[in-house]
Image (cartoon, rainbow, N blue to C red):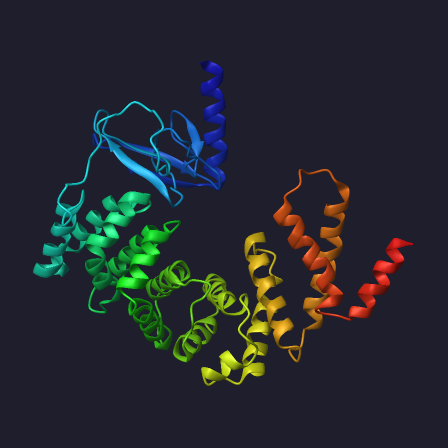
Length: 397
């Protein structure tokens, strides 16, 4: 016990120098200190992962933990503890524990009363009730990550959430929270995405209208930038690979890119990647939108080349952005590639070839496939195809 206490004290002492410290109010009113770093959360008793590690069994959601999307979430009525597990459509033989069950009436659901309170608070005196609305939304936020609850929230309360998110008369903080809730419901939940896109086909356009309004502002506060990022993140969840962008939407994304914020630019390229990753029949699809195909493709190729070289871009984004640039170059051979990108690609190809050849790490077939694509594209797509053939011939010798 002494050793454990000493270790914990040492961990907390180290965390105090480099972590965020938050005060968390427990249900019994007692305040506890949480020390948060990139991977761990520590209190005075224990340390646990910052991101909830789900399994097939119900596990307690500890204070401050981030919930990945698509999990089942419940309130255990025996212990009054919030729990989560991996989503499972089939019974798994785990003993039943009483949980809060939605009303059988299809017009109601488990959180009907909570949202009704929010609705009344907004319609009566929002300025006076803002803190109460914020608290209610925050209490419901964890359940938006849940596969079943997220779907129930959307099919019953989407009109209210959409109204809060898009109403410019509502304070930015509440619009931000409502947008987060919608995005949380959609994440890893195809049923929710399909429901919104089919029942509310105008919603994506409404979000672009809001983005256009925010980008047009001369004096944007941090709250405006924050909401803009939320909107872009939500669009990424709702936009399918086959989505047909309008000219207005593409122009709006271009204006958003002009804002010198790395996260906004990543979100914008996430969306633009969906336009280029799937073949768009060369120039015809862009011409239909009133765009000059090659200059348009060149503009986004330049943007991708600039961002992909940033050392802070993770591997998943590197893959997505590279695949988009690869597709652009295949469809529009006139697009010019910058020398800085070619130098970056050369370094990447050498590094990834070494990783493929060393055989030290367990094979990830998807990663290997991408690495090979990047190595071959250095000459085949972005350089001189003859150089690729000569290099392969020399390697065989």
